[in-house]
Length: 220
Image (cartoon, rainbow, N blue to C red; front, side):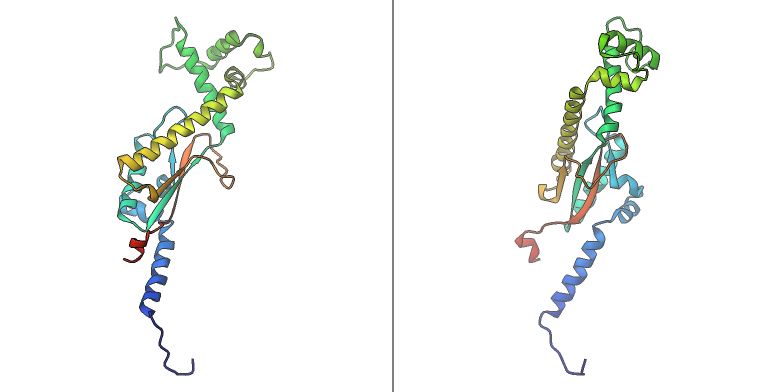
């Protein structure tokens, strides 16, 4: 400030560290960058959708997982959290229907084969026949009938099981299938309170962050 010569030791290292930190911070939300590199939609990389009746994503969403894995392999300064998200109330409605429909299709002599369309009225008649006194005349909607037919306990157990299976699949796919070191990613199977999923399908939301470097890496 006063025209005096000031010498700062390790100035180059300080500048490099500051610039490096800026690049890492910018890279922790790189969805637009990745989408441009891989010619895909940024939204498909922020959230990996899943079904309620399958362990793995479909081919389209699995490609998004492949892209993220490839990006992590090429960017050792980054890691990623895969946070499992599900609106359990809305998912219960859908899962109850899936379970009721499966039970209907398993019935001996059922004229409808797997994969065939089943009319709502047909499924409602089946549920009333199977549940007897559990349902009442007030249960006039298919949704209400399916929920009573399946039961809260069975739905809770099924949702918990689906979440564990899907988290285990993704963890194995990234680790064993794509060779991502375990310290470079986390699969978090519980939806945190800070995330409020609005949709009925389960998904993994991806959050990038700076990777934790070991002592050897930090000296490079």
